[in-house]
Length: 219
Length: 94
Image (tube, rainbow over all chains, first blue to last red; front, top):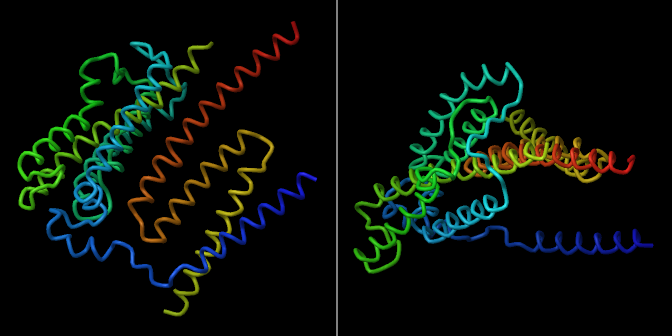
C-alpha cells in the first residue's frame, strides 16, 4: 500500500521536474554576459575566479566563515590528541606517500597560481593541500597540524583575518565593502586566494583527523 | 569528423547511463560497505561528467572533496559503526 503511494508521488514529482526542464527557455540569458563585460575590471582573466574573488567576494567571505565555524563545531565534539600517532600499517602507503606528497604540494601551488587565468583556484588548491596532509598523516609521518597550537589556530583563521582586513581596507579606500580597486585587484585577489588556500587545506585536514582519531580512541 | 561526434555521443550516453546505474546501486545495495564504494565511484564519474560539460573547476572540486574526502570520511564512519555493532553483539551474548 505504502509502495503504491510512493510510486504515485515519485511519478508526479518526475512529471513536474520533466515539465520544469522542458519549459526552460532554449537560450538561457544568465549573468555570463554581465560578467564578460566587467572582466576587464576584475584583475584576472578566469571568469570563475573573477566572480568568486571579486564580484562576489562577500559570498566567499561568508563561505570561509562557514568552514571556520564547522571546524570549531567538530573540534569541540572530538578528542584530537596532542600527538596523535595514528597510522595504517602498510609499506605501500609509506613509500607512495613519500613520492606523491611533494608532487601534490607542487600541484596545489600550481592550481593556486593558474586560478588567475584558467581553471583552478583557492578551493581546488586548498583541497589538494588537505589531501596531501591526510596522506602524510595516514603514512605515519611525525608532524602536527592540530588546533592545539596557537600557530595552527592562526593559520586556520588566516583567510578570515585577511578577508576582513581587506574588507576594511576597501571600505576605507573606495567607500564600499570589498569593492577591489581596478588597478590593484590582481594583487588583492592573489593575497586572498593564497590565504584561503592555507586555511581551507588545514581546515579540511583537521575535519578528517577529528573523525578519524575519534574512531581510534574508542578502542 | 562524423565518427568523432558519434564517439562523443556514445561516451556521453555510457557516462550518463552508468551514473544512473551507480546512483541506483548506491541507494539499493544491501551492504553498507558496497554502498560507500559505489558512492566513491559515482563521485569519480560525476567529476568526469563535469569535465565533459566544460566545468573543470567544479570537476576538480568534485574529485577531491566529493570522491576523496567524503569517501574517506564515510569509510572511517563505517569502521566506527562496525566497532559499535560488535560491542553491542558482545553485550547481548553476555
